Image 1 (spheres, rainbow, N blue to C red):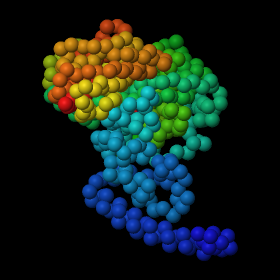
Image 2: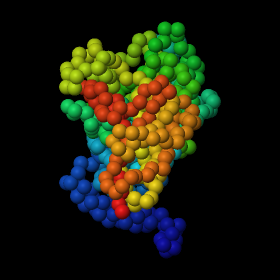
Image 3: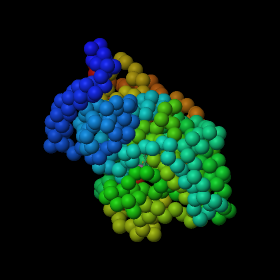
Image 4: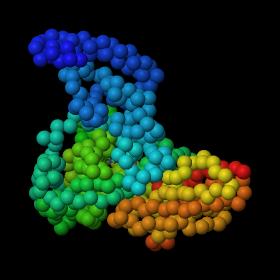
Length: 445
Ligand SMILES: Nc1nc2c(c(=O)[nH]1)N[C@H]1C(S)=C(S)[C@@H](COP(=O)(O)O)O[C@H]1N2
Ligand SMILES: [Mo]
C-alpha cells in the first residue's frame, strides 16, 4: 500500500495505469457476474448514470470516469438479487420495471419507518442524474398569479422549515386480497410507512407565487420518465384539492428522518400529503401547477386512483363517470410485533404492538381479537404526534390453551369508522383494502 502511495506521489501516470489494470481485472469479474444476473433476472437499472450510482452506493465512486456505461457496481450486486439501492434486504420486491417494493409488517416495528425500509412505489423510471445546482421547482398554472422558479437553495433558505411525522400509504395497499383480482402490483400490507419529513410548507411557496381566487387544485410533475421512454408522456401527474395543499402539514420535503430523501423515494425533492393516497405525494418534484379545475394529469382520469362513487358488486363494470377520486384514506392498523408465525408457551404472555392510522382524522381505539373477531379486548393507544401521523398500540395477550391462533387488530377512528374484518368494497383497481390485520401465533405446552 505504501509503495503504491509513493508511486502515486512520484508518478501519477504510472499509478493511473496500475489503477486501470486493477479496475480492468475487477471489471472482467463484474461483467461475468452481471452476465449471470442477466441470465437469471432482468437488471433493474439498464442505463444508470454514475452520479446516480454514487448516490445509491452511499459514497463517491472514485474512479467513476473509468466505469463503463451499462455495468452494475458490485456494491449494488445484491440489488439484482432482490435488494434495492438504499433499501434493506428483506423488502419484498413486487416488480422491477418499474421498481415496486413493500415492507413486511415486522420491519415496520420502529416508531418511525427507517429510510431503508420505506416502501417504494414507482410508476415510471426514476431519474438517473441529479444536478442539484440546476434543480429547480417551477410553479405556474392558470390559477397562479405569476410563474416562479425556485432553486433547492432558495427553497431551503427563503422559507421557514418544518418537520412533521406523516403517514404515506399507497391507495393500492392490500390489493392482493380482492376477488375478482385487480391488475397491478399485488401489495399485501406493506405499502405504508410513517417518517419524519422535513421541508417547507407548500402553502408558503404557493403564496410566494400568488394564488388566484379561482384556484381549485394543484398538480405535480416529477423528473421520472414514462416506462415507454416517450418524453412527451408523464409517468404520473396527480395532485390534491387546494384546501389540502394549503394545510400546515402539506410539505415540499427534502429530508426523511433527518437525512436526504432516498433516491427511490424522490430525492432530492418531493411533496408529502400525509393521510391521502401516497400517489398525491409527487417524487423528484420539478413543477407544480395551480389549477382552476381538478388537475387532469396522468393517472387522474378513468379508473386510476379512483373508486366507484357508490358501492358495486364484485366484478362489476363501472363507467368512468361513476368513479370518484380517492381522498382521505380509511382507518387501518398493522401488528408489527411479533412477526407472524411466532410461537410462545402457554403460561407466557405475548406482548403485541403496532401502528394505527387514518386519513384526515385520528384513531380513537384499537382492539384485538384472538378468536377470529368473536370477542375483542382493547389495546393501549398513543395520541398522534401531529395531524396525519400514525399512532402506536400495544397489549399483553394471554391465550387459553395450546393451539393455533390469529391475533387480529381493529382500529376505530374518531368518527366511529372501524376496520372491517373482511375485505371491503370491491372496486375495479383494488384500492382501499383496510381489512383488519392478522398475524399467526402458535401456543405450545
Ligand atoms: N414522480 C413520481 N411521484 C410519485 C410516483 C411516481 O411514480 N412518480 N408514485 C406515486 C405513488 S402511486 C405512490 S404510492 C408514492 C410512493 O411513495 P414512495 O415510493 O416514496 O413510498 O409516490 C407517488 N409519487
Ligand atoms: Mo400508489
